Length: 256
Image 1 (spheres, helix red, strand yellow):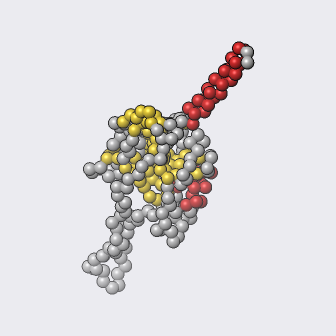
Image 2 (cartoon, helix red, strand yellow):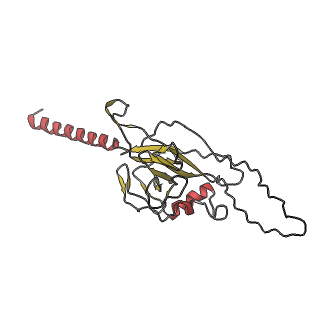
Image 3 (cartoon, helix red, strand yellow):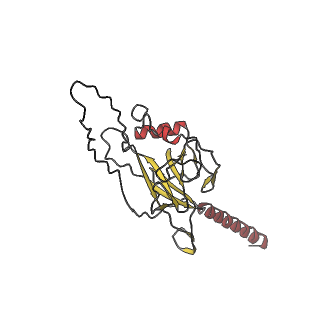
């Protein structure tokens, strides 16, 4: 083989090596990962269903008593997760061997919840009316069954959200229409900006993805001894007879 042929062959090898390296880098870009989950508590309301005794004083026969009732009902059409996020930054290969790892003293990023175990992270987009309608059909959140708490009503708020990113996708502040801010200290937020949650849609799997922006140890829905990094609200099946049914969700976390 002459010198020119050897140089041409070497150029081809280098080009192939460069393409292979480029593909490796592209596949190794930071995307949300599956976190290790530790359940801290699983609570519901302490309401027992015991009736309220109305004093019979003065309620004698021959009277008409006008009486207003104000009830707070535990909503079985929704459930929520709250907690903290820990983690580290690592540089590893496809086999899980790491060359270096950095501890994260504080975390920022996102927590994701979805019903599928594989998300097209490059095809995520803001949920639209059609996507939300499909999600409502899956959970039977109809206008007839859930006029006040269906997905469209719960997430369609004017509060909007802060900017965030998912892998290489950037979402500007207030870009997505379907968002919410969960409560702080048992109260709706006014003038603050914590615990934004946004509905996204995966055009690859046709599933909704719920995104909670990670805070750094903030007071959350209860303002006692606990601080939280995330709070995320997800729907549950509203079909009659399925109150005890638990829809499984897959969780992902992304540190930025």
